[in-house]
Image 1 (cartoon, rainbow, N blue to C red):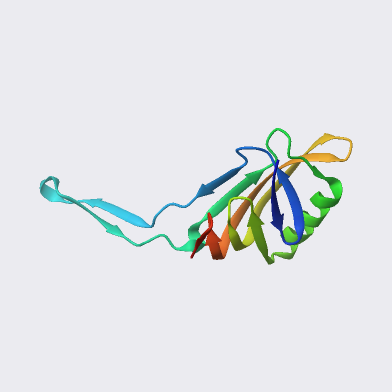
Image 2 (tube, rainbow, N blue to C red):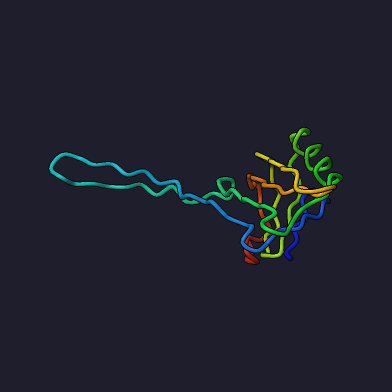
Amino acid sequence: METAILGGVTLSAGPGALAQRWPPRETFFDGPGGWSGSQWFDMPVGDLVLELGSGANGQITQTEVVAIRALQRAGATVAYQDWMGNDCMVRIVDFAPTHFAADLWNYSLVLRVRSAVTLLGVLE
C-alpha cells in the first residue's frame, strides 16, 4: 500500500491511485491555403493537477475525512508529499469520500499544484 501526506493527514492509496494531468499551453490555428501553425506557451507548474484515490484497498478513516474536509473548507494551500517523489504545495479542488464499511471510506481527491520542490523526484 502506498501513502501520501496532505496537510499533515496521512492517506493510504491503492495501486494505480495517482494520476497527473498536465496539459501544455499551446494554441493551434489554420490559415488560408492549407497552412497551419502553433504557439507553445510552456507547461507552468500551476497547471498540474494531481488525482489521488483510495483504489481497491486504500481506505481512510472518518477522522481523516473530517480533517481533509476542514483543509478544503479553509481554502488553504497545503503541503503534499507522496511515494512517487512529489513534494508540492497544493489546493484541494475536489474531495469525494464514499462510505465503505464501519469507519472506513473510499475517496478521490483532485489537487491543483501551486508550487513544487520536486515532481516525480526531480527538482523543479
